Length: 243
Length: 113
Image: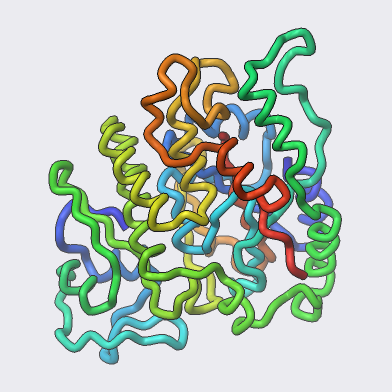
């Protein structure tokens, strides 16, 4: 998805590093990475280290780092370049009601890719002289809030991903729930947990992210994707990009 | 930071947390947190967590300790210097963000769900 921008901007001195956040690990990321065939570094982050280290709370989120290893824009909404959409299901296939509703809400999600990519090009060309390159003080000030509760939530989340990896799903759910309670603003913490409660085993199993058809009462989380996006409003799914 | 015991080598703690242990305390960028009780190598994570104000979650049944990040400045970042993120690629080869010094980098997080 980032390949086009990488081809354009790599000769001008930009490298792109993509980081796949998934406690399931490399095998869950593999089909997407192999389809994209990136020539840039493409990494797998099963414990969401970039949440702790950079403040990622949603995907895609991007961080700009200069030649000296100094962050010039902290984690923020980072829309991918537009691509030709591949239909998620065959034209004649009738989607389950929930997925139809999910795609309906998703169509109202707003991002500002043109502004963001123009800013990125400006920075690649002008470096520190770009109006979009922030000072270190501004970078720190704009980095996402971290209260003691958020830090505690991040420790719980890291434990949850490890327990999931070890096959202790019930224990993982307990820690995911606590992470959600302590850090309710992280969409990735919620989506990660919801996506592990798969509906069936098709390609959309992990996008269901809500009560399962055969046993809706056993849904272990307070929210789910549809409920939470309706509560927030689809237009607020991503934080607006601030130049 | 996931750990399987109550101690961690100073070098490992520094590498994974981005904090450096100095005579004046634990430092990152311009920020130092004093450690009045001192420390030894390997570090006792309970003592360190208490002194630095880091959350420590114990999962006794699985023998796991999760040492959370600082919240000293109320923000994710206390310095604009990037941490040296180390993660594996699909083939299990470790990649270090610091290997890209000298180039501009756009680091993008995505998810397959």
